Image 1 (cartoon, rainbow, N blue to C red):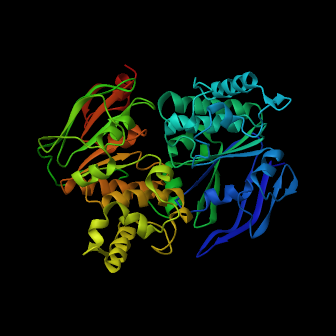
Image 2: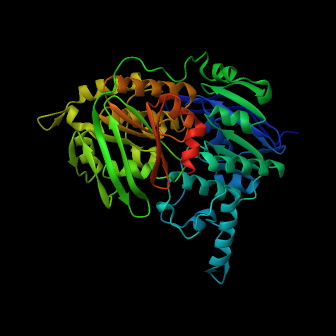
Length: 492
């Protein structure tokens, strides 16, 4: 008997039919991959299953019982836990408090912190991290927060765990540990539904896969009988050729940015590198290596203790991101929800907020130009939305990511730092972003590409700089570079 059957599930939102007569069957103890383009309905289907949304019609059977969850707590009590694509931790609380939230044990109204911390350490060890249980979540990197999310899910006695893009910011040993954890879970009889846009992960970890498109099930297949091309055709309804577009035209020019001996106590040490006009510079390294810290220093989000930044031949001191944008340097952050979007604003407002000067005249906003420019950005990045008036919170994760990219494209920065720009983005949308990156370089813009997907770095970068424990450990031309060469320096 299957552990899960979802039959003829329908769900509509204003202007969008998210799920159209969806049916899904999952076997006990398997890792079931759920694939589809952004907006296909994957996350919506899982939110219905886990009690976040309630279906308009259809039935759900879990372990043979007809269930209808109205809250996530009801799903937890039955043994269903979801790890969200967007982090749902409480930043002001400790790692231990987040893992054991709602279950703080003790006697006589006193919390037994020793017991709580010991449990947290145990669950953290299951995902291969030695984070201190008393560390505040707000002090963690996005990747570390993701590991805490997984540990939190493991702390429930779950029989079905839904992982929505759990590896989006993981690489190297962290990714290996995730796969080892999943394998251990399935050996215990736990079932995993695994949502990912990384096809290599699907082939590595999943037993079966289901492809969704436009709110419908396209097909369910055994992974061992499936090819990469078959998956891509199912997701996009056709073929994608040349996933990484070749470099065409555009010459790499003079040096535009030079970073000299950048140091931050405990984080960065004598970081030096350069960037040239029209160049795509890959910044490689394992999670926690210091890549994001470098980016934040460049835009003034974090101060640095020593060193200097030379921009267009002159030393610059950028105190905040607003000043950086005025100088011509912008960062597309890795955490779109907390740092890249105002989710309660419309797409149009998000697009233009970083460059209001472009739609201002005499102190007034030119709303017609704002509408025209926003519509062009939607078309250029192929954002799936019924209107530019749609609130950002109503978009799928991948389409939200496109909005963040578009926002900083609109700022007309000459140096664009992209931190995990395709996190949570499907294969079709990824190529669209790759094309944008290539076009920017061709136009003479300079790009710093930070990615945990080394194949992505190899496919796009003109040059690659490798970071390890806050230091630059090597540099290599993009042409001829391999994952093995990167890893050799990333582990130095």
